[in-house]
Amino acid sequence: MIVRHEARAEDDGYRSPLAAGLRSTADARHLAAEVGFAAARLHVLEHDPPGLYAEIAAEGDLEEATWLAFLVAYLGPRDDPDPFAAIAAVRTSWGVLPDLTQAMPGPRGSYDPARAAASLDSYRRFAERAGGQAAAFISDSAWTAEQRFERVHERLALPGLHRRARYDLLVTLGRLGRYPLAAPALLLTEDDDVMLAAKRVFGIGDRRTLERRASALAAAMAVPVEALDLGLENWARAERITQGVPDAADDAARERAQAALGC
Image 1 (cartoon, rainbow, N blue to C red):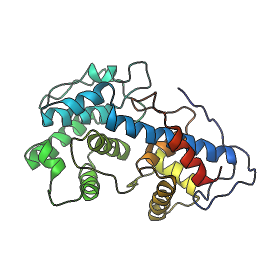
Image 2 (tube, rainbow, N blue to C red; image 1 turned 90 degrees about the vertical axis):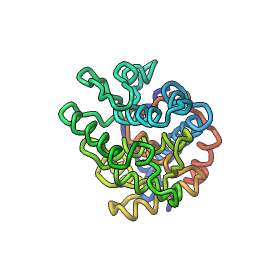
Image 3 (tube, rainbow, N blue to C red; image 1 turned 180 degrees about the vertical axis):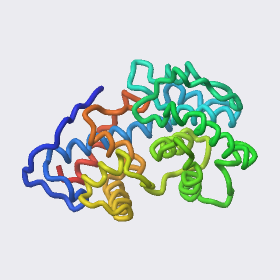
Image 4 (cartoon, rainbow, N blue to C red; image 1 turned 30 degrees about the vertical axis):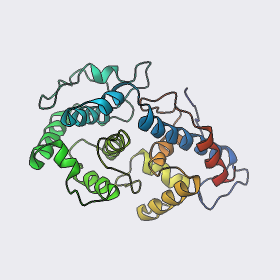
């Protein structure tokens, strides 16, 4: 399913304290639909993951599972009939850097040909310093899942690995049950597509205020806050990014989102 939303609708008097930047019922309903889709995708990841996500969940070697999850997040699933084909074509075992000269990244991928070598080498050194990927992602067994997500997200700020890829990686590993990870917030750190959309939806540019308003909206919609990461980006796009789960659907989540927004 491809959803097109090429322009903001005209002001029809719509207002919501949860989304102060919205001025039309159509935009509010579109936001609810995209958050509903993103929430449904998270549910699918947790309960019936497709493609390479299923391999990550089932892989007996945690180092191999983590490396595959990194490649999926770094390159990004494509919005093709087989979202993972381009990733599968270049995947390698842990410790072997892939040849990415012919890589075809997805819309959320972080791959940049000019920085690929630095990105992969930095990630390998990130793992080696901790004694392996698993040790790097667990880090401190006393941390809560939310603390672990935030602190590892900070440590993954590597050359050529943008926020959305880092966030997707941790969400994937958490939802697939590989590590105790749970997003505490959107963790906005740069003017990427998510932050730009958040500024428009919430009608403010201050990052801390955006984080608070995003968390409040997620709570009102009764969806995980990480659903807003993909939901906000898709709301601002002409075509939906499906992130490997094109058939995800959750009418209940969409209806909760609509009820929260009053649309």
